[in-house]
Length: 143
Image 1 (cartoon, rainbow, N blue to C red):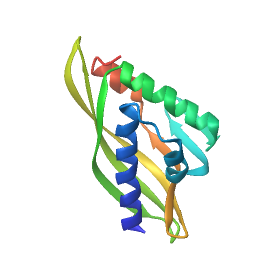
Image 2: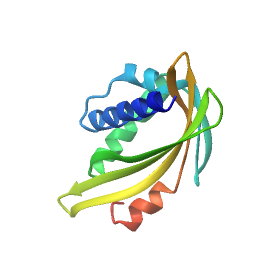
Image 3: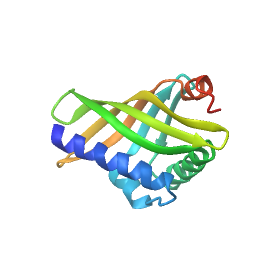
Image 4: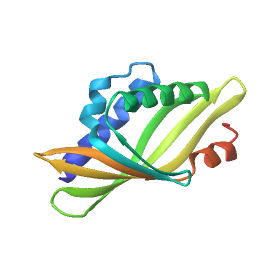
């Protein structure tokens, strides 16, 4: 399972950076995410379906990231905690790089904890837990 989950996050990183560059592949969303998911942050808990509403939210999100100057997302570490033969928590350590005319290049480290299910050898994200992204960005002068 560990090798498959690491491959999933390599694809996730590549997908994120392609999407930042304006090359969003809706079919990759289906390969990365389960049919339903849960997300949690200090803003609350939400659930959703891997459907057109997720794709629109992601497109809007990548546009917002571009507007705030996000240039690159790098997966700098991944620790996997197995739960059983089908599930794990993938603790992802990310570095986001921002640059704008009014902002010097700024790298921000943050962690997200993903819930991953592997069925038939194929891992997919079905949830995540993240910290306060807005406060982190404000603290670094991005917002």
